[in-house]
Amino acid sequence: MKFRKLFVLTGLLVASSLHSFGQSKTFTVTSQIADFKDSTYNMTIWNGVTDVYYKKGSTKNGQIFYQDTTSMPLIVRLTLPTESLFKRVDRGYIPVKSQSIWFVAMPGGKILLKGKLSDFAEVYPSGDKENSIISKLNRGYHPLLNKSANIELKLAKDTSDAVLNKRLTAEQEQIDAQAAKYVNDFLKKNVSSVAGLYYLEDMLVREIVTIETVEALLPTVDKAYRSSPFYTSLNNRVAGSKYDVGKSIFQINSSNTYDGKAFDSNSWKGKFYLIDFWGSWCGPCMADVPDLKKLRDSYPDQLRVLGIASDKNESWRKAIEQHDLNWVQILNDKGNNNFVLRLNVTGFPTKILVDPNGKIVYRSTGGGETSFEKMNEIIKNWK
Image 1 (cartoon, rainbow, N blue to C red):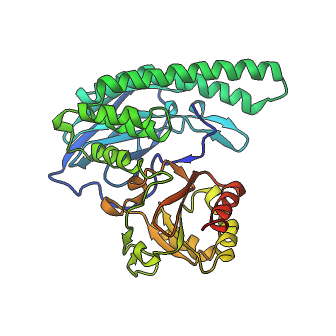
Image 2 (image 1 turned 90 degrees about the vertical axis):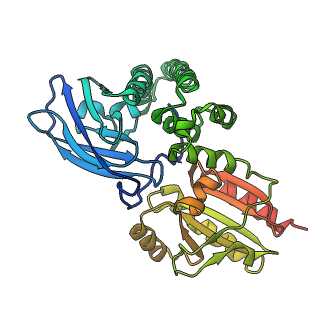
């Protein structure tokens, strides 16, 4: 579903601790997977506060066995190295959620992963209410995703038959529409859950649900879930979605800068400034650098540039030095310093041009010359 989309914000590398809130309790993950042969696995873990963590594990007695501690609910994606799960094309593969096993890790929880591996991971969790909900979601959603990905694979491998391609594309669009409807219907009924809140934001970023849908669902969330970081994150995105063309932007303050000096966007009053959301891991972001420098150098007195990166600190600093990104650089953080959420950035690169009066006059997601041409016209014709 939407496999051709730009780099989307589904989880970026940020180093931190899983054990920073309340009392940590041990959770245990075991499995009963038919004909299971893998000896290792990788896990991607979201807690809703920071972005993502990575863990590795080895099997025990021929099955998955993993223990860790957490003080908050976690969304976990477990990926196996089984070759049949990967949609290989050229030197890469088509990423799809159905190639992985998804579950919720609650403090003190005992999760059982049960099922089989085919050309996708037909393995679903049980053990508590939260895992029953995510299991129900993915039992209906993942088969549709897998069908769509298989069509994408066919289209990527052979484009010689125009008639066949047209038929396959139409079939894929129909499957994608079914998958989107399934998710939307499911979330409306299950938004008061860890998986419901996580997937609601994930699907918003992927443009499978609309901001209007999120705004309508948030007031229906049970009070017990309103203190969840996943709920807070959604709230921030809804607020950030208001910062579109024609709206005044908020004051941006941060000391999480490359040189350690405090930055205040008010110091640029009376000038244009361009906010460039980027990451060292994002190819289109780095490809835009020459055009960004050219635009900045065309208006030395009128235009300033602010880079805001979602990245690991080491990679961020290395990219700044390697590519001579010699303008104000902020590393995205949490809370009020999470500008990705506060401005509802859903893809990378995203560029926001602010005029001398503090109003947003241009906003785009995706790289390329066209966006720079449009921004150049706006600045050149400013009165």
